[in-house]
Amino acid sequence: MKIKRHSAAFAVLAAGALVLAGCGTDQNTPQGGGNPALDALQLECGTKPVSGEGSSAQKNAVDVFARDYGLKCPGQNVNYTKSGSGKGVAAFTAGQVDFGGSDSPLNEEKGEVAKAAERCQGNPAWNLPMVFGPVAIAYNVEGVDDLTLNADVIAKIYQGQIKKWDDPAIKALNPNAQLPATDIVPFFRSDESGTTENFQKYLATATGGAWTGKGKTFQGGPGVGQGREGSDQVSQSVKATPGAITYVEWSFAKNLQLGQAKIDSGAGPVELTTENVGKAIDGAQIQGEGHDLRVDLESIYGNKQPGVYPIVLNTYEIVCSKGYDPETAKSVKAFLTVAANADPQQLQDAGYVPLPEGFKTKVTEAVSAIS
View 1 (cartoon, rainbow, N blue to C red):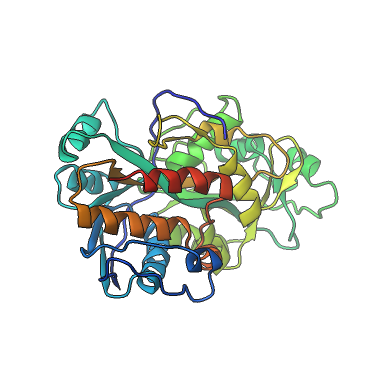
View 2 (cartoon, one colour):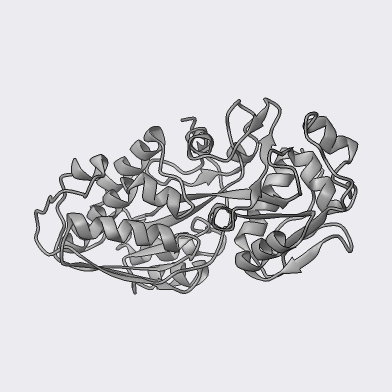
């Protein structure tokens, strides 16, 4: 993986809640129920429960992590509170939880880096990217089961420059498809959304700046499209509306069996699959230093290599590098080690992708260095 060092910030979604059972003994290594990576782990479970708070983008992933953690450390408690990324960071810096779940790394300009270091007994906090979830471009076009789009076409749809499914620009990407002369009905998130923020950042990066909207509020062309609140509403609207299109987390598109466009970044159409998203993650550049693994999202969104699906969101677990009491440190390290090795099929079923091996090595090395 390439390494860069400069500042960054980005956002994703908002929070989830979880209370599950986990570890009691200091050494505990039961089998992981069919997950070879989990079976092979040798853990010091610690004796204290693990507490976290923050982003709901990772809620279903944390469900998977906690299940696997319970298999490795019976009797342990993992308490993850739904509150949103900002509150998760605040709870962590105030010392109320062991880790913060956030859709963006600690922000130095807002004083979060300094507050986190103070909470960690004068030691730096690390941003560990543990959860990655792809965003699907979901559509409902009768008779079209295989559709390819690119960032320029998607941007022009949401800017109101492409209005029909048989537009020449779409035909050029789909020469063998029977595209109807149906109106395109774009849907977007009407509420503030980390998905929107990252979708707009993808469009801006992949179009070379032709898309100018940014932030958590969608900024398409005047009067273009229809807003809906929440991922469930935009996906349900696409399901019910001929000619519709939207951007939505993979799990929603899969659950409703919506069409999912392939993305052509210049090297041919790429389907949204675990493998193709994994290639994007593996090619990500890191902006932090040492074990502070802040991801440069532009290195993902602008990746034009063959076989890379580039529209990906991620969330961080924010932890102390040092400063925990010994038993809490053991519990936090055990939980995060299990999370990095979580069951790949269960993550995929929940709409996420497992960490590819090269990236997982970076994460697990950082987790191992917590003391």
